[in-house]
Length: 124
Image (tube, rainbow, N blue to C red; front, side, top):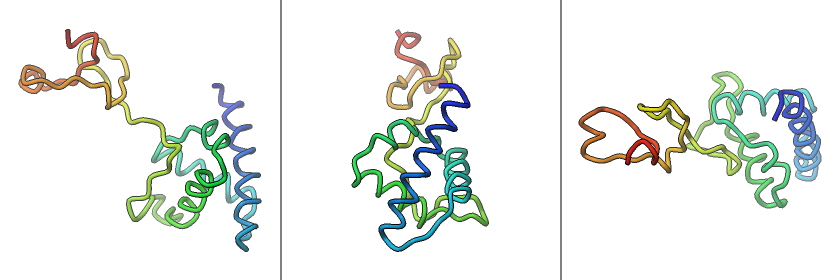
């Protein structure tokens, strides 16, 4: 996804978020909403396509959570809040250099001794 496509999707998310929050009596402008989304995305990468496609319950969880737990002063998410649309955490394979989801990393007694994290292909 290009930067422009990401920004367009983020704008669509912001529009939906503003409507969602307004239904709860919370007024927030689009610029503030986009800035909050951008900051949260920097500390916890978000999949904006998934967020936009979420049903109202999951969308509300993430938007309300960001609204409630994002601290604009410190630029942190508090209270261990984690958006459901967060991208999987990745690490770099010590052998081939590919980014690998932490769920796919192979750790064995040999790799611990070597101090590396290996993708499934390199761990063979």
